[in-house]
Amino acid sequence: MTTTPEKPTPADKPDPTDLLVETQHVLQTADGPLSYTARTGRIVVREEQVTDDVFDGWKPRGEIAVTAYTLEGGDVTTRPITFVFNGGPGSSSVWLHLGLLGPRIVDFGEPNELTPPPYRLLDNPETLLRASDLVFIDPMSTGWSRAVEGGKAKDYHGWKRDVEQVGEVIRLWCTREDRWMSPKFLCGESYGTTRAVSVAEHLFSRFGMQLNGLVLISSVLDFASQDFRYLRHDQACLSYLPTYAAIAHYHGLREGSSLHEVVDEANNYVEDRYRWALARGNRLTDEERDEVAGDLSRITGLSKDYLLGCNLRPEHWRFCTELLRDRGQTVGRIDGRITGVLQSGIAERMDADPSIDALMGPYSAAVHHYLRHELRSELDLPYAVFADAIEHWSYKEFEGRPISVVDKLERVMRANPHLQVRIEYGHYDLATPVGAAREMVDHLDLPRQALDRIEHAWFETGHMPYVGESSRVDEAEQITAFVRRVGESSGRAD
Image (tube, rainbow, N blue to C red; front, top):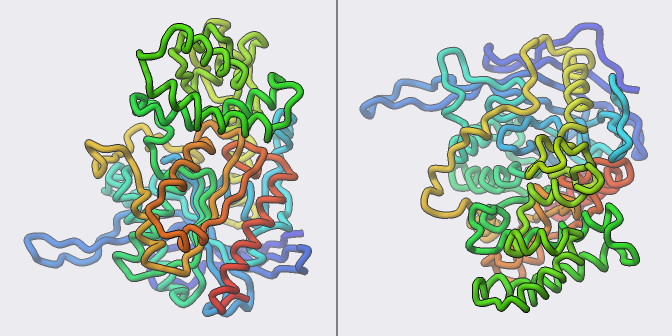
């Protein structure tokens, strides 16, 4: 069982404005007991300020919340370290922290069989701490991260500034903790994959820091491949079809076929008849349109009339509302296995994502209890599981073109022939569908040898493969194996 001291001990840091509370713990795992140090709190991030070519010093800009775990007795030149964040943008790192990788996890239950409040925390014998030290980062405005007094948080609510600040946290940590010579990994989920790839390129181009591995969970690197705002490209429609088929199967609308059979059918239809039909546009005859609508109805579980009404292009938010309308239910966008009550029988879109509703309560309660009670933090700010930053997120660097950081991944993989990448996919994920991620990988401008450094993993889950005990254990073991394998190939891992 995890143990904590009676009183917190501030970690010795060179900056007196930083305060990381330190506690000691022991966790029992299949690999034996892990004795580790946990530190939680905030570190001050500074930036050079120059006015009229005159250096004005390093000015504090943000107080960024981190929670770090370090195995006792580890050699910093051989022990890997993994920096972890979620996405949103506007999400804290609580999901990967207390759902998958940390030494403690929330007792969530199973999809549609949720644990009732007030919830509880459990030891996580599958924690990645077995193979790597861990640093969970809450970007600006999420968790307990805030701008400094007199500063503007919104200055960091955008792709470029977010990358710079998260990159500075990592640089600062590696410098203060003497981790420049450690095997280093980044792990991100959802928009966190956009951030991870961008930060990896930034760390190399700005500081010369090379990484050993990237773990990209439910990736989105090319937004045009799944964003219906770019509908005239029709790629989003193609990307979502296999996910629609998988969710229809899960809810019993494809009886007599296995999941893999319906997904394979959808993938084959995307590459053949559906791509052809969308490309023809108004050149389709009435007979051809009727035939394609019938095929799509069988594949997706949506009615033929509905598919004709939406011009063979079902949008994913509307799919969530339409699929189980006759049952009075919606399906989750984050996790299509999870259902909710339809607000209105004639609603065009669901009023809330039932999968987010299911997750918020357990994770919010767990993180507030865990950081204060078990890790002894004295901060009493509201912990922002989600911030509203996404509503005002700036992509000005991509003005006039689709948002894509694929070139950043190509850059770091060309620059570092030892960088290994792991990409994870969830069959029931409507936020970052499998088809879109695969489309991105299939068009990477890299030599074959570089593509061999990308490993892929599919899960019968939604956006968060760790929702559900069996898939959580499987995912955790696979990530641990990846980090160990990559670390060993560097010749420096424990």
